Length: 397
Image 1 (spheres, rainbow, N blue to C red):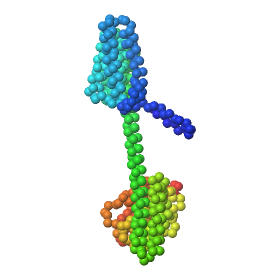
Image 2: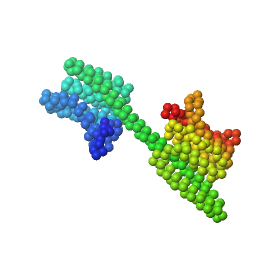
Image 3: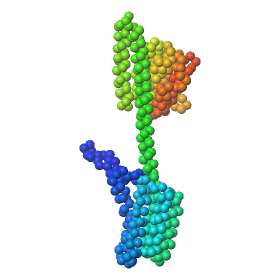
Image 4: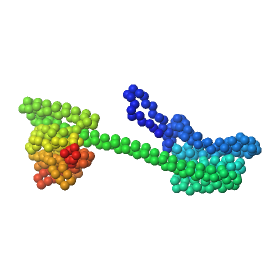
């Protein structure tokens, strides 16, 4: 497992604990060593067969055959279990490997004695670690039954009674370990997916901010540039004023983009109203705007969402609607679902030529949804109307 240190001092060096890459292929020799450190201690049950071969009780041919059988058994077991911790063998190969383990365990016990009965522990472990759960649930009891039959054939009932629970429980314990490894892999993949989704959401947030910021500012710059062009050369002083406004808007747009990129920008409704008044006046649109805003106690996130809605509505009026009048209202309302703050922007224009909502309205829907609000936009009897509502409650009231 990995250890995360939260209270380390600024000048301390925290060395993370090495992780055992269970469930994925080894990337280097260090990974191989860590996996072997998990596997090799479990070879303790081979102590009895090794001691039996070293005791001199068997003939030279029997001892040689015993060493060869033990080497083949150990190599097959390690290959199955080690590969299962990263890149498992195909199902048929696993089945053949476990069958070889079972056959060797039976043959070695019947020919060399019950000192070799511990081999059935490894057969049970291989069943639990490498087979699917449904297969493991019947192969582990089958391995246990083979161990009992082999032990009784050797006439050692005491060892059989001792090993019965060991073989059975170790096998089923390995099925739990296998499930734990699978869950760990799924959690790792889910964490990677969540990180990717968070990155995508941040890109969408930045795209919405840049669209709203640059769309409004560039529309105003384009409008004032056209006005300055029409004023030259006959009205140089007024043209100079328009150029000064262009410079100011450009500088503010640059500041806004920088703030949006760093994620700290939260436009306020009052500031957006002042900017809307300036932009609409420059575009020749008569605007009826509120003098006071009922935003006392409203959270910054909700007020920011309404400010973005106002900016998008004003941008659309200037760029698409062809309107010459608009009305902005900000009201607190009491509904059956509770109090809410409502922003409405109504104009006498066409609302644009597109049938589908643009990127701006789509982004507004997403912004308002994050604070529990809703957006309504569409043509009315004599123009176009956009309404944004955010709920008030708790700290907002």
